[in-house]
Image (cartoon, rainbow, N blue to C red; front, side, top):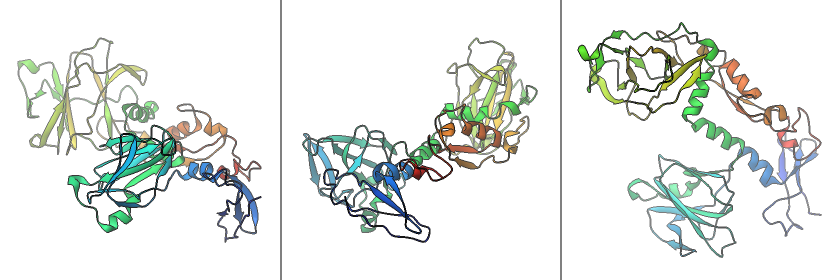
Amino acid sequence: MADKKYLDGDGVAQVWQATKGYADQPDHITDAMLAQTGGVLGTVGIIESQIVGMNGVIVPPPFILGTRYVSNGAEAYSSNNVRMTFALGTYIDLKQGDVVMKDASVINYFGGGYTADGGSTFVAVPTQTGNRYVVQADGEYFFWVSKPNDAAFTADEIADGWKYITFTRSGSLKDTVDEIASDTSIADIKTAIDYQVDAITPTDFYVLPNVGKDLNSSGALYESSATANIDTSGFIPLSGLYGVCRVVTNMTKFPLGGIYYYGSASEGSYIDRRFPGTNYEFDTFNGETVVWMPIDSTISGAKYIRFTSDNNRGFRFWVVESGPQAGVLDEYAKLPFAGKSIVNFGDSIFGLTRPPHDVSSYLAQDTGATVYNAGFGGCEMSTHADPNYAPFSM
């Protein structure tokens, strides 16, 4: 049996484990013991799978100047002062699906390589220009990073290399929260809008005040015989805007109008415009057939929009926002925890049911909060007899 040490603390659990006698499992610290105040012990299980599974953080080795790369299936090294890499001979154990993130304010590119057979062969990690890289295979990895314009790294930056490229275990609570927080997909935006379905009634529509007027290529209103069937909205703040929902009378596709972007509520601040054309799908919202005019969040400096539409197509409009504006019924923003975050813990009732029919989704709908589900099947509201579930129980 391995020698064990444990230390009582003032209410702070501490984990100690000597690995003598476990040479056949060098990658796992097994039979670990959790020491709590009063010397009460509880088995944690494999530290690697339990603790990393909760906080998600995988600590990298130290950094040095230079670059490590893969050449003809072998690892190579080159010295320079414009790249920073793991110290020679060091690696980080990653699993398929783990996430590598760079600090874009400091790092421009990163890359590296890995071995899945103990160093016999190496496979390159292609140079990454994005902020996020998902690990493709289990293995021992090394990475290098570079700064914009190939600027040199300082001694302080080398010592703090772990701050600029981070590693997160796939499926951990941290990974889940990070993924949800950074997800700006249309599907999730529409899910957020769906929280408002019961709060918007068919009589609450945006009225386009500029009847018979269109916008020209400079974002200015104009009127002519050709604009008789065109109406244009007023200036609508982009802050908190989910989108413009257009109710249609039939499912025949035709080009939508345009969305014009401005830096302020004035025509002189016009920036750009977008025409969705027929690139859209029909949806059901509040019991009616609708299409969504997409908002382009990549237009720099945009703070307001105006939109145009044919007025002979039977269109009606909802401007769906998170704050009260003319023509919008916004009960969602009045919900008790709108704009706040909630993390719920629980057993399989929480952990094994998927959105949108899980407890967490209903909690979000009724409170207005963003809810993160940390439920785990088999957990209890007391000390769990099974050591594998104890760390996740209350």
